[in-house]
Structures are given as structure tokens and as C-alpha cells.
Length: 303
Image (cartoon, rainbow, N blue to C red; front, side, top):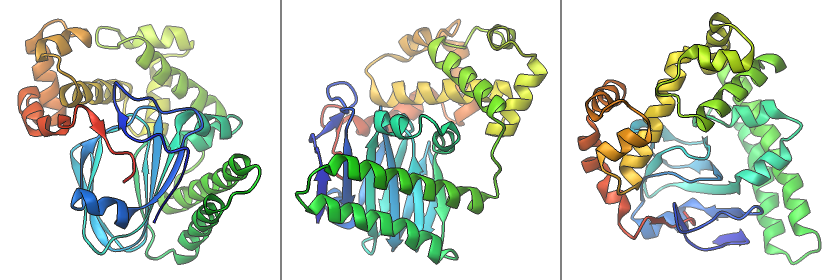
């Protein structure tokens, strides 16, 4: 059964908009059946998705990397990240889709929570039944609320969602044995990422960013290693690679135009950079993903 609040139909990269109060909760088995159990790699702007796998098995694709799963799992998909799925027919569970604006609203005083949802995650919880069932209790309460016609439904759902986010946050921390970074480190990292997204970093030196942040190259590199597990240069390279993947798979721009848009000095340098990062040439990546653009750049939201 598909149960949803404010379902605005199809989502397309360019032609559709995710409204600020968008929230959608749908069963995976019923919605994926119409896609023959396969969701081609794609991405969503301004939308987070959480997959709660109760049973069954399948494969998730994160930026061309495949991860198999079975049993109880929680999968976190942040906005603007390429992802896809191959489900087996025994799959049972739910997909929760939430607009970025709701996520930011609920976590405005808890930046560490939103940060923990900034990367794609597969949390395998077959040995953590109590924690998984605790999260599913929130999903079941949300389903019940969506089936009723009560006053203040949106406010009630937002409260349930915030509690669910905290539960997932705790599960993730325990599951990955992570630690909460200091507030100062988190501020530096978030500002660095914001600057990368605002100013294309291709021809910028690391000093250009550290000057704005008011810290040294060594300090910024330590921040990136602590939070992202990558060097400053690797964070920038991964960002550029992800942007290139999105443009190659979801736009009609030529490879030369993409190189120009990302401010590479020439198309040859862009091709060498992309192949070094993605282990495939831009042309081959586009050929392998060209089928994503059937149906005029739209992807059904209800899966």
C-alpha cells in the first residue's frame, strides 16, 4: 500500500520542483514491482531518502560502487548523490523521502545530525534487532498518522521524523563506532564544502580556501581527514567527479562543454582527471548511463 502526504507526482531534474513541505512514505515491494525490481542510477536535488529494509535482499549502487545487502538494513541517500537499486522479489520495507528544507528545519540546532546524513550509508543491522525495530516503530507510527484525517498532521509527522532522525543518528554512531567531531571542526568543514559548491574549485589553490576560512593548509587537511577521511585535495576531486558524473548522465552538454562548465583548462585535462578518478573515460561513462535519460529526464518518485 502506498501512503503519502503531499505527493506531487513525478520528479524530474529540471522540470519539477521538490516543494518545501514534501514528505513521502511508500512500501518498497509494491512500488518497485512496476519497475521490475530495478531502479536505474539517478539523483535527486533537494531531497533525502531513507530505505528501511525489513527483509529480503538486493544490491545498492552508490556512484557506480555496488553493495549487497540482505535482512535488516537502513540505507541513507542524501541529496545530489547518484544511486540505484536492484531488488530481489522477496524485498520488504519502506522508502521515506523528505525535502531538504524539512531536514534543514528540523536539524537547524543540531548540525552534527544533518552532517551525519551528508554521505550515503548502508547500515547492516541483522545483529541489532532492537535498534532497527525502534526505528521501524517510528515508521509504523508515521504510516498510521498518514492514514488518519486528524488535525495538525504535518506538525505531528515532523515531530515523528525528528525523533526518527535522532534514532538513525544514534544507530549510525554505534554501528560505525564514529565520534562526534568538535563544533569548530564541523563549522570549518561545512564552510569549506559551501565554498566549493559556490566557487568551482578546479583552478583554485587550497590557499584560496584557507584564506577565507582563516586557517592553515595543515589545519584544513586535518579537518578533512577527521570528518571525511580524505585529504583536502581528495575532497575537492571527489566533488568535481560527482558533478561531472551528474552532468554526463543527466544533461545534453557535450564533454567539451562539461569541461568548460567545470572550468578545466582543456577537455584533454578533464578527460584525464575523470578517468583517473572514476576508472572510466567520460565518453564511456556517458554511454553506460545514457539510458538514464529515457522518459525526458523524469524519475518516478514513488519507489
